[in-house]
Length: 189
Image 1 (tube, rainbow, N blue to C red):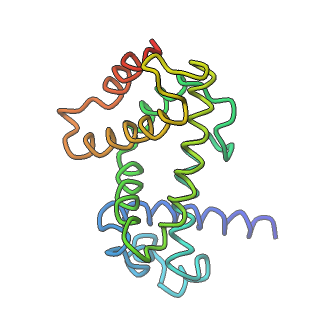
Image 2: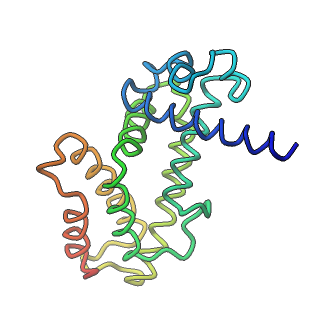
């Protein structure tokens, strides 16, 4: 019984990895369960045994991304500003994951997209966590006079904007170096 659960868990992880690849290539709307199933050597019915809907598979992909970004802890408690730099460097080593996340993020702004609610919740959480990180680093005011709550959406925009620029032109945009420059601009270095 434990061996069967382990095999099922391995198969689910394989399906999620395949879904990441297919979404990175085609976007969520262009990705089909049949394409994901084919990539892992399953029938579409076999894939539905593990993920009964495309939306369920999407949720698993997004949760997997957050596991990577939070180190498996499900949250960013105790993060410091200097720990964001290694995260940016780590993201630069996994373009497929960043591409999938970026494609889903871009698509999620359309009405009725199944990832919209996830990203809305995620950004609310990220802004609050970053405000805490900035408060721990700078107190109630950053060097430029902004409060941590005012600066948190800007830091988030820099992180995500760098990913888009890097994906479009990786030779011209050194994502980790650009983020280090941003930290200097903030006055954190």
